[in-house]
Amino acid sequence: MAPVVKALQGGTHFESKVCVTAQHRAILDQVLDIFQIQPDFDLDIMSQGQDLTDITMKILSGLKEIIRIWKPDIILVHGDTSTTLAASLAGFYHKISVGHVEAGLRTGDISSPWPEEANRKMTSVLTDWHFAPTNSARDNLVQERYPLEKIFVTGNTVIDALLDVSSKIDLNAELRAHLDKKNSHLDSQKKIILVTSHRRENFGDGISEICVAIKRLLNKYSDIQVVFPVHPNPNILVPVRNILERTAGVSLVEPLDYLSFVYLMKRSYFILTDSGGIQEEAPSLAKPVLVMRDNTERPEAVSAGVARLVGTTAENIFKNACELLDDKLAYDAMAKASNPYGDGAAATRIYDALLR
Image (cartoon, rainbow, N blue to C red; front, top):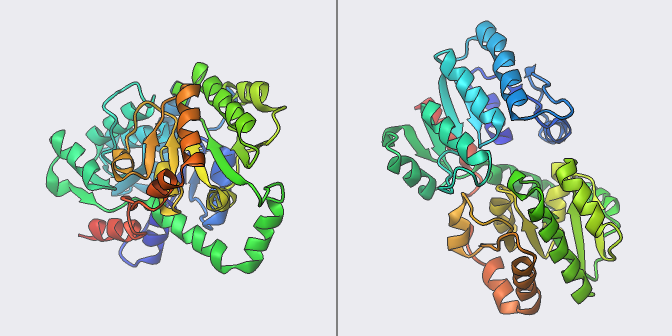
């Protein structure tokens, strides 16, 4: 959302204010710092052990007073989090238009990813202006009978943000030297495999299978290093530590700030992930991505050949990772495929659509 905030603040046609819920406090604060965004409103809802009901109730309650005082003409929400759905519902309750950035993503399975698929489908019902990242996302919305004149294909703002930060790393020698020093544990003689996993549907057997696959890879290949920023949720943290903590060749690190994560993506050979956004970011950096899920709301990446669905069984993850490590042609076919997610101008297109 940072590129949209910057576009609105840099233009002359709108008065905009930023509200954060702090659904994930630590992750949020470092992003605000990198993009130099000062929130006008901070609901600060983060609390230990909160569940989806707690999050939704706190956001609805917190936004009620903000909307009453400021009376915005439109509320812009992004993606498919509980924050997205709750903010859209708050707009609907107060009869305020909602604009949905990254609209129209679908897996077709309401339980996967959970709860994101339901969040984005319900957000669409409450949305007046749909900013779809791709033609495929637009087609999903048209198929669900949303008016074509209310849908705008913009590209994805995540690519705007990624290219901005990637450029800063490339052009600022001092920053790059700082990041090199910060990541001195990386072995320049080895292929770096970046791993991320946080999806709720992978809690339990899923994350255990992922860890077993990683362990098998490290046992087979001496020329790889696995870097795994581990989500603090105990459902992820505990099994990852139990299976991988004493495994040679793996670096279990705390969640990274966005700048450091982009740097790590640029250094990586390929990426194993169950994330949504990384499916879009990795191809922009020419990095193959193996998606550890059974389905994806981003089929464009799979169709373009830049991403591959590998499921969550240790055997499938291991087999597909081995192919990228053993077969240069297979690797190049993914690394050199065209990225379908935009050119870095999505925020400008959203601004222009709002202006029209």
